[in-house]
Image 1 (cartoon, rainbow, N blue to C red):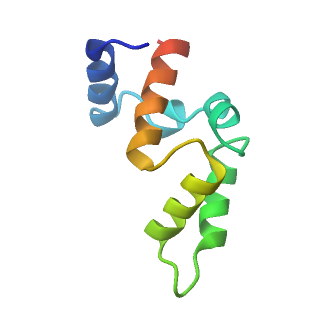
Image 2 (image 1 turned 45 degrees about the horizontal axis):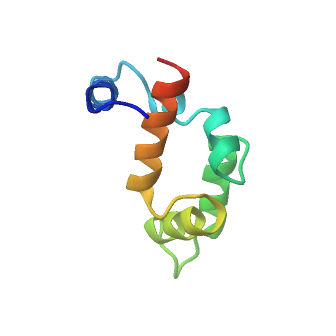
Length: 89
């Protein structure tokens, strides 16, 4: 498990654009924790869930809860940061 210092460092790197979302949400991360192979498939699923009655934020929630191991976006981000630290740093 990542330490608080490591998590803080990665969050700072994201803020400073030293790493980007694609690095954090790697293909390996998606394969491990979702039904998707990569971020593009995840985004396609969200776009396909959007209707005139379903906004993007709601579509994201539906996809997260139904096709991933996460309860919300914050949960996904936390796990992605830990995964990144454990595998890439």
